[in-house]
Length: 117
Length: 107
Image (tube, rainbow over all chains, first blue to last red):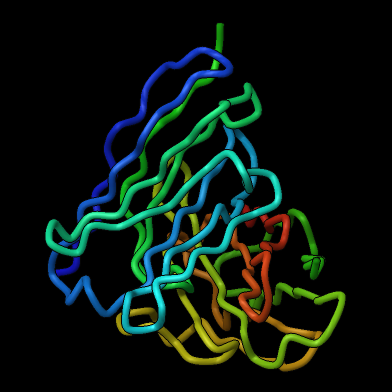
C-alpha cells in the first residue's frame, strides 16, 4: 500500500527556518518525482515545487512565491523527501502536502506550518 | 504562467443530477490536466489524469474530457458523497497551476 507521511510542521516566527520531511513507502521511491503542495487556511491548492528522481536528473522546480527561500531535496536511502523553508513569511502559513509523482497521484495527510510572531 | 479559469466557483445540485465543471487554460496544455476532489477536512484525491483517464477505484459516474485549452469534469448522476470541492491542475509547464476550485453543494 502506498503511504506518504509528512512531518516537521509547527509554529515558527517570521524570518526563521523549518524543515519538513516526507517519508514514503509502498512504492519504489527512487524512481519517482516527489512534489510539495500547500493550502492556506480556507484557500485553494498551490503547487510549491518538486524534485525529480535521479534517473531523470534529480532536477528541482519551484513556484515563484518560494523560489530562493525553499529548497527541496531527497535521501533515497531513507525514502524521504525534504522541504527546507527559509526566511519564512506569514503568508507561508498553510497545510503542506507531499505527493508521490510530479502530477500528485497520491497525497499525504499534510503537516501544518504556522508562521506567526 | 498558465492561468486556469475554473467555473462555476460554486454550485448546488440535487442527487441524480448531471453536473459539469469547466477549466479553461490561458494557453494550450495538450492533455496535461488532472482533476482533484477534496472533501471538507480531508486530503485531496486525484480522480482523473491526462484529462480523461479515470483513476483506479473512482466511480464511473466521473468522467473527464478536453484537450488544448478547454476541459470538463462531468458527474453523470450526483451522489450525496460527491459533496466536495473540485480542482483542476495543469502540469504542462512550470509553474504548475490550479483552478480556483468549484464548491459543489447538494440541494
